[in-house]
Length: 617
Image 1 (cartoon, rainbow, N blue to C red):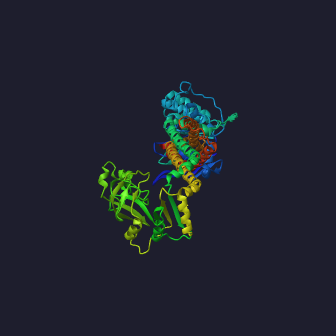
Image 2 (image 1 turned 60 degrees about the horizontal axis):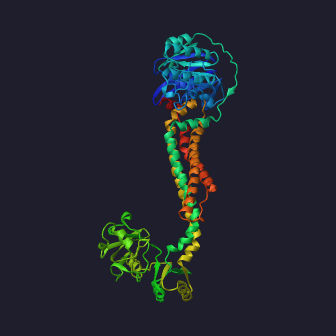
Image 3 (image 1 turned 90 degrees about the horizontal axis):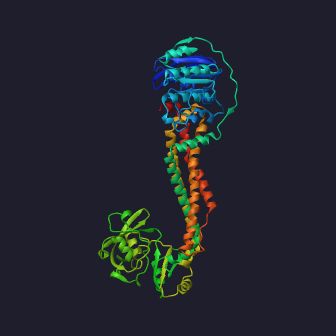
């Protein structure tokens, strides 16, 4: 029934098995004896189909199974290991019934006395008790072949004899292959004995022929939702780590749905306040024929009696900020400047004077405080500062002297300079023969004059240019801007989910590495690679599911609380945050998609687990 033909096995350059040829009966107890290190356990692993790296052939019922060892092992083989190989995060009963998670099995009567410890934790069991559990586990998997590696090694003589008697009974119905050092027990119970030395069979003795006894078939039973139950047990085996993952993912999901909810509900509010962000007296302009603006044009526009200042934004130059360091640009020591075009004629001074040449500037009070930090702002007067500009890949400074500080505080850090000063200075610093191009300009109207009247005059005077009130154009584009903001939020939300799921994938990968011996044990008792992958994947999905349930509850409570605050504290009964179930479903759906992607590394690792090497750990 079972044959080994020319089996050879090497570990590196050492030959462990040499030309092994064996033929086994369909039933009976066949023992393999020999000194330690002679290759008995290795031979047992090959017979059991868990060691696939060998030369020669393994035949079952006359057919080679070398290319189908997983199927052969699952259908025909069961094990009693020398090291027991119990799964410590399962209960005693679950360890015994482990094959039932992967195959429909006959329900067996427990013959060994285990009532005293059947409800005990695995870590509290003695070696003898673990040995008995290892035996009982094989009773749940009525395979054709039972492989036993030192099955009595940890038992006292009484229980050792009991185990051998039970194995002898098993040998009447199936083939029992036994590896043992107990010569007396082997000779007493074995039907055949193979003796090994240095990886070779040196003797074969046959004592008796076993008569196969057919057993009465019983109804088989399989555990319901086996992969789910094992994944839950695995999840609970490291509660602290699992709860940390659930907590971290819950925070990520809650922040995402909360942020997206706020962005949608606040869009109308942004429309109401957008005009307050821009000077009410400013007008933007550009050529309808995409021509570059010129200094001459700016001077002509500025000649209008109601216009204070006209400036242009150079296309290829970007102001990176202001610093006290001349040698090189350092972002960490540079103060970002948000506005460098505003007029200063109607501003009042706190310190100093107004600029008298192109290398002199004013700064706002808030900007001076930011520059000086904890020092006296008066020290800034007549101090050299450097404004860095970028053109292409070049970053160069322009030297200025701060000659005055205004009384105004600005929301953006601001400095004020003479008309077109940056235009001439940039041209000088970069030494370009041609004038820098500019497609957009800004006009500041006297705050005491009507902007709409000035706008009409400009449109009549310069018909080839387009003039717009800054607040109006911004309002027209706010919806599109909010769409772009939401896209950015979606991107950041995806990144947040990815970071959390990357953490889950990394932890699950470490979990698989930590439990690869347990997964290898499952493979020895009927688990296929698909079974193992389902257990790993289900555990990850359980983490995500728990996080989503908690997120939903917290999200609902947060929405209710915010609406209460708005009504009672802000006295606003029109603005209401809504519980967006559609948003939740979208975010949760994306989360499940990404969690499947994040599980690719641990699942690939599962497929590559070496069963024999894992069992040795």
